[in-house]
Length: 174
Length: 435
Image 1 (cartoon, helix red, strand yellow):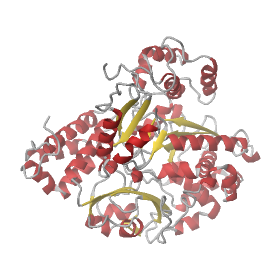
Image 2 (cartoon, rainbow over the protein chains, first blue to last red; image 1 turned 90 degrees about the vertical axis):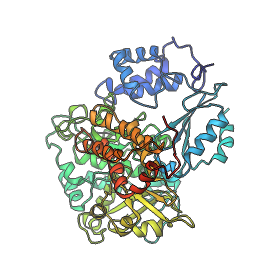
Image 3 (cartoon, chains in turn yellow, green; image 1 turned 90 degrees about the horizontal axis):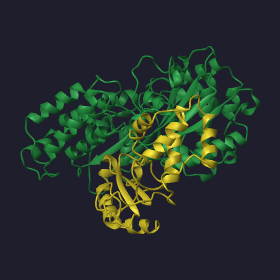
Image 4 (cartoon, rainbow over the protein chains, first blue to last red; image 1 turned 135 degrees about the vertical axis):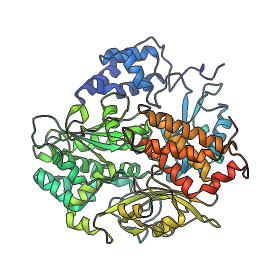
């Protein structure tokens, strides 16, 4: 199994060819149109919606977003790949981001990374564990430097993580 | 206050008074603490009077550049023939800085109130608050607060019955340090890659969606209601001798100190008091080696420079660095400076938007040369090579990201050269494997 072959994302898995912007998601997108003078400005929020529903942003989804906002797929892909938080391939059920920039680095962040890689079985940064449960990535400054080392598991922002706490934290994410 | 620690007697607590007080998060809780009085008052003032009051207070931008806030507002055109926009920069990503996060987490309504006053003052009916994507808690708390502010009539088509429309939209970033640069932020809101724009035109002339725009930092906007409530003279009086730096400043202090956290001080406070009294000094048995006082983008100070500095815009410059965002990274004698400078260079290489050659190539090559030195393969010529690169990365690009990468490298070589020499001479074990 290659690191990226684990399917999934957050929550349920929907077949990728089914459109994202239907029903309530469509209505949510249309409500956004009122908040910006251009449809293009809804691109970042629309991409967040795709990722929330699917767990990642596929080529097909890029095409769908482009159509919804009257943009080209190439343009949308250019934007998707600029921002680090959009996943362009499937990731584990739980996506873990750990800060290793200087302020956390001097407080032992690299040991937290090692503990996370060991406990999740991910092996290396950016890879997904063989059971599809976790993906661990290093991230640049999470903006919580006084609480080294901060770790973001999905949307849960966890402060002051030590290597010893890692197994207990992971237990909360089946 | 020194959240997450109790307030220190040497602090001047204004913005951070309710950090840690969860009740202050709700609309009712905020009202109980005197909330929204400033917005009501401001809506009864003329726009010009508000701008003049903020000008007179001496408030300067708290995001890093220190530009006078009232002056910035006064650049906005007076005519109302086109939409005007306010953008609140809540993309706090400068390594060492974590103050805006606490403002949004604990006192979301103070920011909403500040934004609403500023929007009214510059003739904007809409404010976009750009919150970095990783700030999941601030985003959740701000969303709830904005919703409540609408429901209670503080925001909307007729804010507090004043006839003034004030709309507020939270815009979530998606992971890009560069979007904290104001023109990159506008591009990001417009649904583009976060590439900074060439200035001029300046945002007040042609900003968001091509319209007149003002961009202010979270902390700057949060200071505004206090100025409206208590007056410019009171704010200006919060200063210890240097009238160019007024008010209070939140300091995020992190790294090798006993009590990392956010402290709020009057401008002009001795930096030594902040390091030793408030933050508790170094860990037992250790001494400080270096301080990066304004977020990672400013020159590194030695312990001696830091201990001699007064904490305000001019005081830090006098000791060879800059106040920046006041995100203070403190390093003790256990720190490998070469390794940490490499780590910072790697940060900038990762975050470069890559549109300017000097930055795209310069940050990447700086990182590679630092890696070579750390792997024990460095050469004496590498000093000059790094300094030449740094020179070409300073003042030559659209934004200052590459300048920010050069700052720690140049100051690091100047002040901690012997640590580089040790790696180059093979006197120190390589910290990285050779590539």
